[in-house]
Image (cartoon, rainbow, N blue to C red; front, side, top):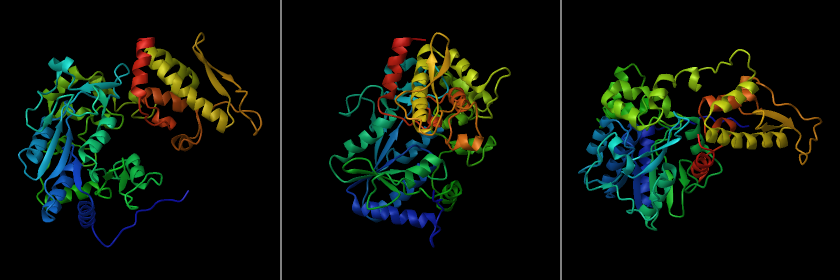
Length: 426
């Protein structure tokens, strides 16, 4: 595999971003930004407004999906950025949208702005003219629609058949997944620009600050006197570095490690969050411990990783256990076919996995191998070998998507999850 290295140019990231925005504004009829109130989208919005004003392309659209259980400081910053700002055409979304909850085995998703749970809302719904709370406003909207489905559908609706650019403030330094989004050779781009992705016939995502570091963001804030979310000041005063300060909804798989910040920075908000989102307090207490896999997972005495996996499965709610068994079955069959391994079938009476040979698989490399209890950690991390330790860690980390087994999210998977809960119960 060819290694990928950064190529440094004779210009800074701010200048490069200006050039990217100028190109986008020149070539697209409609431009809007996906705005979260965080430092990255805030900086991008302010640069965009400067460039758009210079080119006579105002106003620009701004999509803010309000996740309800958010910092009050974030809402204040969103208000100062998009409310009563003639340069911005705001869309403030307060709809019942399903969001990932990685801190509970009983409630894998929670629904913001659910009208049936109005008494538990963390905040009152804002009353600005740009707030969209009517479930019938968008022709594409479905009650309980998933966040990942809503965002691209909004882009198509906003485009109305015109050539449209959606600006997304992701940076490759933040995560490997974001780096892959930029470097993917499988995606369709706009005129070969790596910082773009085709979303639909008329809509492209652009990532104009993909090459910025966290230090660049705060340098821009200081140098150009940009507005920013004051929650970062509180987070910094609590001893967190500029790289640890994340304010997106904190119940997702990657974001949950910052859950404790709610309790420290806005305790009154935190009290409501505990009542609103299942597992929030548990996540706050244990997310940075081995109990949720944040640190090294410890194998209990007397167990192998295989028996520990079986034990963990049997402690889960019935529907949750069935969910993982289905995922594991796909994983086992793939390795039986591609890696010359025995297939572990789950015996429901014994509540254990039993090794079998799958007849239709051609074990051309000789006798099949037993899946190892564990392997060299580097091999496991790079997903080059199956192991029972990998499976146990998936359960402990509450990795319902089984990303650590190379699965990815699919359309409709939450509907299947809900179906299993209806069929198998708790």
